Amino acid sequence: MKHVGVLALQGDFREHKLMLERLGARVREVRLPEHLEGLGGLVVPGGESTTIGKLATEYGLDAAVRQAYEAGDLSIWGTCAGAIWIAREILDYQQPHLGLMDIAVRRNAFGRQVDSFEVDLEVEGLNAPFRAVFIRAPEIVRAGEGVRVRARHEGRVVFAEQERMWAMAFHPELTGDDRLHREFLARLVAS
Amino acid sequence: MEKGTLRVKTGFAEMFKGGVIMDVTTPEQAKIAEEAGAVAVMALERVPADIRAQGGVARMSDPKVIKEIMAAVSIPVMAKVRIGHFAEAMILEALGVDFIDESEVLTPADEEHHIDKWAFKVPFVNGARDLGEALRRIAEGSAMIRTKGEAGTGNVVEAVRHARSVMKAIRRIQGMREDELMAEAKNLQAPYELVRYVHEHGRLPVVNFAAGGVATPADAALMMHLGMDGVFVGSGIFKSGDPVRRARAIVRAVTHYNDPEILAEVSEDLGEPMVGINLDELGEEERMAKRGW
Image (cartoon, rainbow over all chains, first blue to last red):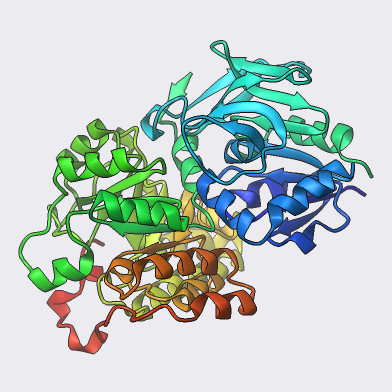
């Protein structure tokens, strides 16, 4: 059985947890470093990135996640605020973050809430379009050398993969389409 | 590509879960809230405690105040309109605010009708005292529900009453037979489809926050234990002795509501809380929770 965690400091961690459980994973809510013990994957959900970043730093979760990733134990999947948290560089704002993935992101790149949208998105590796919900979404404005771009919306990068990390600007946990959760468990998380 | 869909509205509200939304009246206060870890701010001219003290008609804030606050922070900005005042809502949508609170804290503009929230791209949050009221607001297009509590009192008792009332009714409906749901919809004065949803899922179809009287980290943790998804804090922060420390403490209390050691640590040495009002000192006509239906 696959053991994964969902960072539960703030945001829509419940939806990720429900989807992963439906796919047969054992899921733990992660709020403190000791909750990472024995996990093969960690989903960092959408929410408010400044809030998540501050709370993670205070209790030492950022260092613990970095260590577990570098030890080869943990795969990491950041959606929306989670993608901002794992990015190496955040344009325009100073805020605490993990900084592991070789990408730069711009927050609220598609506008405020009145401009939030949903769209059928072509994702590399999926056989049919994915209904993607973008909510005050970030954009991946730079992807480093070992980073594979897997989806663009109007030419702008919204899904990227590097080693055992995914960064995604949209919310796959809100649509009920579990293809990406399935792939994450099957391909990125060790048993 | 579609904007303003139900999924985009309710999905945005999901992102606030486990977070604290704080009332602010100036850009400086908004920055304090953001720095403390608030997930959003509510831009106001006066906090509820001052509205209560000063009396008169309370209306939507001056757009200038709201725009200054929007410019000061990177987190979402909400603002309030009077119950039923859809023209105020049109103005806030044009300003680009991220969420509108159709709020009993302001003086109602319409005693019979709430705003038709389906007509807007911007999402709305509404107060509710019980499940019937919550489901009526959702049927009107609300994307988020909060308890009414009794704003500006610093007294959590009404928020507790409303949270318990909603959660108890949800549990009761969950245990019903299918053929009892129509009679329950009639009793609640709520649409049958939404009663069915509650029966099947054991929760509201939108997030449900605590509001109206939260003043301490322990108040916030209590509301989370009662099943609320997050917390609004109105007068409780900037009417207290040390807003910076209190704001930080309430944010941590909501995340770690189930960890008594962290709660004890963050509750320490916060200075004076807001003074607060006992509910039996308020006349019936002074109760904001009675506004709307």
